[in-house]
Length: 154
Image (cartoon, rainbow, N blue to C red; front, side):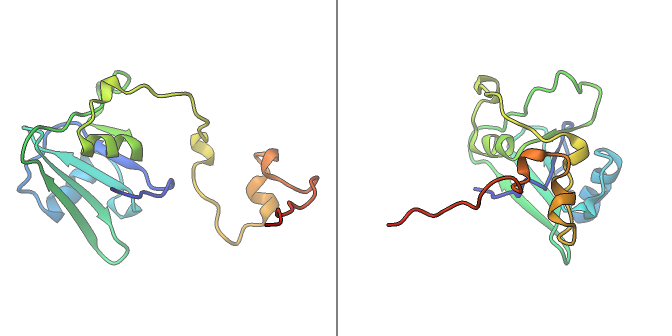
């Protein structure tokens, strides 16, 4: 349903939000409750008390955008956050957001081990950085010692 680039982070407000709030109210919540910059381009997800309505706030480059969904039946399930019980916000993955929107029970989902980039290398390099500077932290990405790849003939 949503195609979210890996650079975009998704923040979920754990406390219910009044769905009458529009741009200015949700922007204020992103700044005060989630403690994030709403101009960052990240997604900010808010759910109401009955968990049947969901709003996603994001900066669209030239202005703020809100995506709003109201369920006709059922409710959204939020992920469990044992480690962050005292925090008002929670960072989730694009996969978790997709599961929430599709109504899949997150407690029954098993996650297999996957490689994850550490937080210090999470930001993407600028296009002006040289190839060696971008990959100096990961020598496997450097291909200087290998021959160029050949394409198979049809």
